[in-house]
Image 1 (cartoon, rainbow, N blue to C red):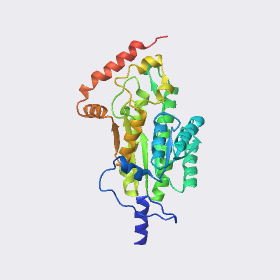
Image 2: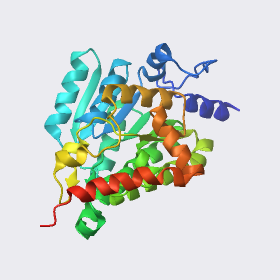
Image 3: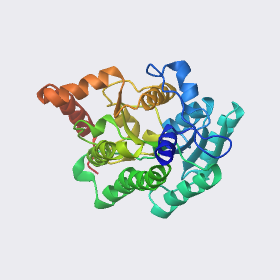
Image 4: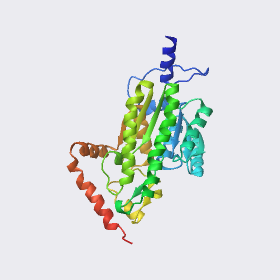
Amino acid sequence: MHEEGQRADRRAGVKSHSGGFQPHAVPAKAPGKDDLMEKFADKVAIVTGGASGLGRALCEELGGRGAAVVAADINADGARETVSAVTGAGGRASATHTDTSQEDAVQKLVDDTVAAHGQLDYMFNNAGIGVGGDYRDMTLEHWRRVIDVNLWGVIYGTTAAYRVMVKQGFGHIVNTASLAGLIPVPTETAYATTKHAVVGLSTSLRAEAADLGVKVSVVCPGFVQTGIFDAAIVLKIDRDEMIGTLPTKMIDVTRAARVILRGVARNRARIVFPFGYRVVWWLSRFHPALVSPISRKVLNDVRRLRQDS
């Protein structure tokens, strides 16, 4: 009986000053703005891709809600700038140089975090790169690079965090995919392939992990104003012109981070936003012919701008 009680305490995820785990009351309603402070306070969170864009915004929002944040990125200077922003606002954060395409580097990230903090409450596998252009212009090297970061990086982070979380009996893995992981996206075939895989990984593991006290969510936003567009691989088309073909306005990155944290606090399986993109997803599922004109327009716009030389 005592052992069962300990398991329940660990699943609750509240650590006492004596080193044991104490259960906390389950809120009677879904977390709102005020509840997010209590939800993330004194929790330990790793955010990959934390140097810029959505990763940085997540670090700042988590830090502002009392979490101890580890900003991990291949851009070490950018990660340190994120930490300065978090600590300057009164939060707690540390930076680490991590290439998420390398298994050993991601394992070290998780091991070092647990060694420093004693536990891992949240793993945000957020690092990613984009590639855009006509499929016929892609090489296998382009494919390997995108898969290494967008898929293997998420697999490495999920696997390392999952082992820790299963052992401690609690934790939440949050994988960043995209609306491109839910619907067809011509001219972003490699990117969409990896994001579909991340959705499949996350939703499948969610069902498997629940009985072990681990939660898994996947984030599927529309176009967010992040650095991914500046760093994206663009094939035979001007970068700014390709960004101009996007069918809708980009989402403010801070707003996106807050929407994600609300979804995580509510333990949503798929966090799809904004509302208009959820409508596109639903249409793609139930009436795919209605979405085809959008895909065709995007494809035609890109091909019109494609440079043959």
